Length: 605
Image 1 (cartoon, rainbow, N blue to C red):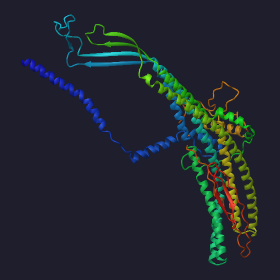
Image 2: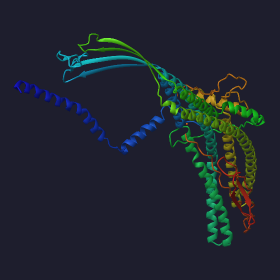
Image 3: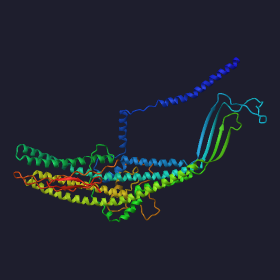
Image 4: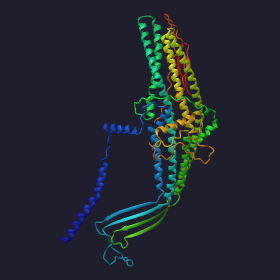
């Protein structure tokens, strides 16, 4: 081999080696980067920093609460600032954005491409004689530059993809409405929790000082009884019985105080006030909607069918399942694709460096015929499942209407009974206080009577909280909510006014006032929530449901104190009927032979 040829060959080998290294280098960097990824724990400083930032963000644009809080404003603050409700709003916004994105899938695909091609050698080809079959006698020829650029602008429209995207957009539109119905349901639960906790806060606010005062009085009486026991002013058995009765009352008062101690924290969480805030509430008028009980059950069932959020959700799910069947049928058709491209190539050997291409392609997946029956069975099963869920939900809604109406009537009757009992116990306590001041009654009798009066007041507030919870549950079952529009566009005062108008309309038995209720006479009226805007692009991003207040254990009736010196015999304190809360079994007080009371838990039917 000649030296010049050897030199050219060596340079060619060196150039090929460099090209291979350059080609392998990106792959080596990619694999090394993937292998270097390791899990990274969050540091305590990062967690604290994020926590502080979240606390600041959660209180952003929340108006300060430095005045007594009304029930209407508490509901308004929960609707506007509650973090769980903001989450529901953001879920609805995400569903809305998914619908917007899916609409663009129906457009043709417009693709722009640019590329660069380089070869280390010329593309040299030989030709073949078509007559003799041998190699052509002409020399090999070059037809492509070793370096050239290509540009492509193509428009592709797939008819099958267009149809599938159209049905997908319809399903995403229904998912927006499902998200709106779930937001309505969360709002119903939020209002119910706020109304229940608000009355617990009101009870704690009213009873806190009285409870502490009676506890101090009982502690003093207990200290006196222990002194009398040490000095043997009474027999040991009489003194111990006296202390036992006082301790029973102290235990009950401490249970009441413990029951009411968490109410303020729960209300702070529901309205998204700063943690640790102490809220003073204003007790509203105790209005109850008795006219709703006079309405025929059939009318209430009709309203619930038209407005209930759970039933609406299943109706939209049924529509989504039916659309899925149409998508399945459409995918069984052949696919028609239409292409149009404008291309440009800088290759100098091309005579026409710019040209246009048009193409039409019809394709069909033959194996799709084998899976068609299974796909149709799956789609039909989805429709049947959606229909079954809808029917089950409708039956559950109708059942809830009847149950909620009965519970509301029972709660109303229990509140009336608790109010009467508290009135009687208050008058008894007033008489005993007057007699104790004149020395005609013992301190034990005063403590027992005052404890019973406080317990009756607590039961009254519990019955009132249960009444509000039953009222909210009936409203939720009927699908009624305040017509408030977008909470982001309303000020807190305007939102409070809307809630006030809605509660007033409900308390006066007006189901078509400021509540979202459809007119059943309008057959063409859409069954959308009248109280909320479906589009929530500008909505701000409801809180875990608060459980019903547990029933405070009933106080044992104080036994008759033995007559010592000039002290009169203590009369037995009247037993107070325990209210029935939503999450608790009925509590029954049973009198035994030894004149004490025990609490037995009956199973609910």
